Amino acid sequence: DRAIVPETPKQRLISAIFEMWGDEWLLIPAMHYRWNHDNFPFIYEEFGKIAFPTMPAFIRRFVGKKLGAKFKGFVPMLGITPHSVPAIEDWYENDVLPSLDAHFAKYDYLLGSRPCVGDFGLIGPLYAHLYRDPAPGKIMKRIAPNVAKWVERMNQDDVELGNWLGDDVVPETLFVLLKRQFQEFWPVQIATLLRNQEWMEANPTTTKLPRMLGEQTYKIGHTSEKRIIRTFSQWKLQRVLDVYQGFSDNEKEMLDTLLKELSGYQMMQTEISKRVARENNLLVAAASDID
Image (cartoon, rainbow, N blue to C red):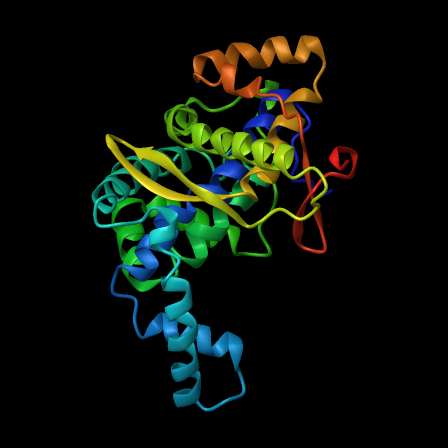
């Protein structure tokens, strides 16, 4: 009765694509705006509350600052540097927020009046970091009030659910975001997949994958920067490609028309020779691919 996975081909695939994008790519502005803007002492207090909720406030703040320093140290590894920050902020404030704001001005959720998996992929970074943290929260409410309203709607538990749009319609208000995803985000996912494949080929008897495999170059706008290769990204990409491959030839033919319009057709044809799986929260080579 409260399904979040659309049954029709276009909506199901677009929902999965937005879930991956929210999880993987919105991590960049989420971490930048949290750690490189004035969100303190709020962040340290929140970390302390989570780690030691029953301790006195001054101890929570002290511990929270220690924990926060560890997370802040990851920021450059994600490709967030003085060189890339202007491009990140330009992308987020002049592309992501305005595009989402225009969409949520017309629709309650990504695909109509009912949230899909894609909405839940977006809500993690857009709520916890980019709405709730003081500095980016002010930016969101100023630039994209409809996105802020969507965040608040997603956090209510008494909202009456409507339906996804009829006739498997994907709103054109999402096309700008989707085209840029295929232009900048998907090449990074596929490059990660290829690096994972190389590593598994070279380590055929090793089950557990390392969390990182060197560095890769990524682009936002006209700016390039180095970032770590996060092996887990293959697991996310795999899920989207599996959705596409699960459709019939007739359904794929219909999907391919949309994918070509979004410049994503070729990337959706990516084949995986060695799959990964999750076991006890660890990324491992799928059992069928272990020698």
